[in-house]
Image 1 (tube, helix red, strand yellow):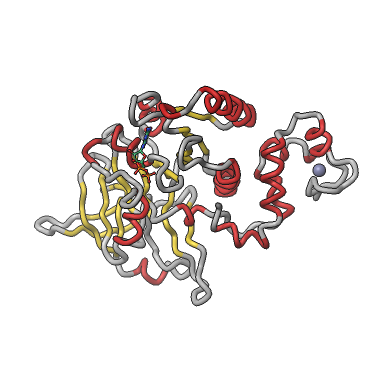
Image 2 (tube, protein in one colour):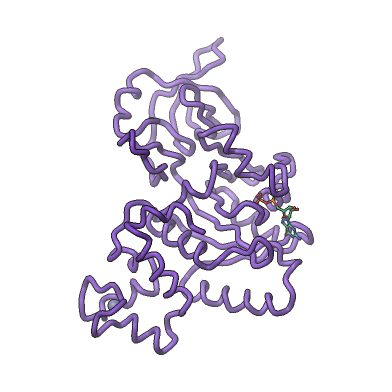
Amino acid sequence: MRGVVIKSTGSSYFVMSDNGQKMECRLKGKFKIQGISSTNPVSVGDYVQYDMIVGDIIGVITDIEKRKNYIVRKSTNLSKRQHIIACNIDQAICIATLAFPRTSTGFIDRFLVTAEQYHIPAFIVFNKIDLYPPDLIESLDELIEIYNRIGYKCLITSAITNQGINEFNDLLKGKINLLVGHSGVGKSAVINKIEPSLNLKTGEISSYHLKGQHTTTFAEMHPLSNGGFIIDTPGIKEFGMIHIKPEEIGGYFPEMRALLPQCKFHNCTHIHEPGCAVLTALKENRINASRYENYVNMLSDEGIEKSKDWE
Ligand code: GDP
Ligand code: ZN
């Protein structure tokens, strides 16, 4: 039988079969030795083959399909081994808001760089639209235009008026979705709109992510009735940029990546180099100043290790 791992406790795995049945499974011994480079050989999002022996209530995972991607928790000083948080992610969605607590473009751009780095398609959802006064609506329109032009699709939602909730539902349909966003932007509220049965607690304290933090260090996937999944990770820090060299960052800004071939130096960092096509484009307003500023800030993120705190 084939299914996808929706929850792991480290020794037990909960697998949802292709026909929607949930089953607890254990690993066949041999995988334990194979998983040398990671502390967990199977993670949430893994597609597995498993056997059920008639009369048994626990299945046995016999094979793990090749992963298309995975996100890791940065290793601690003590361990060189990585912990895989989730894999086979189809898309990453940043839930943001220009209302309180306002999401900075610095946060959004770091999110986008990380998604580019992991080769995961990225989307931005601006929530709490019901709270935006006219001037914020104007800022939002400008922001969305900037991101659309680079190739990122944006949605506008409200968990209060239901604006955009159907589009959000369509976006998640049939996909493994990673949701990222500050506590308080409304992740739980918009998910509840799509899947009321999940009944996630909303409010600053017992929010989606904080809740995850003290219950488990393992991610969990919530199956949606639209056929999709939402990954519940213990926090946004898990989606921080991984080892990245300063000269690589520009490659994760699609609008800069497109101009690099026109820069005089192939390893141009677009800061001080003569003949830099990005700097020219910036002067001519073809590159957005705020995106560029966030790029420069990322460069000084001290080996980018510090970037696990995006604020
Ligand atoms: P999370 O931490 O991202 O999961 O955020 P929550 O879903 O817990 O929402 C935080 C607070 O914002 C709660 O009080 C929600 O009721 C409120 N909220 C969420 N979405 C919206 C929205 O679209 N509009 C308004 N006005 N409030 C919202
Ligand atoms: Zn350049």
